[in-house]
Length: 175
Image 1 (tube, one colour):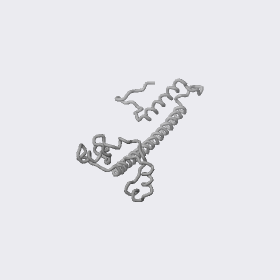
Image 2 (cartoon, one colour; image 1 turned 90 degrees about the vertical axis):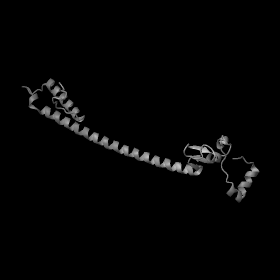
Image 3 (cartoon, one colour; image 1 turned 120 degrees about the horizontal axis):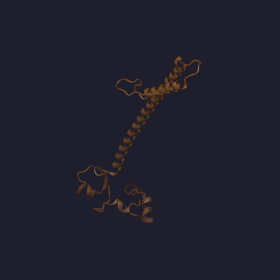
Image 4 (cartoon, one colour; image 1 turned 135 degrees about the horizontal axis):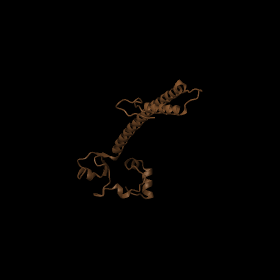
């Protein structure tokens, strides 16, 4: 890459043949970064094996001679296609994961709602039970509170998928 004086630049802009054979590009601040540090030649190729820019000498004679080489434009196109494909796959997986999570949340909300309904029914059944009434029709508060607590614990165990009725192999909840 070279810097041109105004007269030379004007010739390139006004002569169609020069525009076709010497296309102009925007100047870059890269300078030495566009030349091979080993050979001093322009970096024109991309080594796909090492993911590095190389000059023609590196590509033909040196450490990259048996590697998979592409021109910058071809490598850029292929790498962008690969990146786009990977991005789409990740987006699709993310959307699937979000859908699965939403379904799981919906199922759990429904389960919780059903557990709440069962709890309300159990408390209502307990409240209406004759066993908690005494002579004057007043409730035995302490027994009622224990019974409510037992219902809540059974409800929580059912919500967690545990057996609320102890067997010889399960733990007993004492109230």
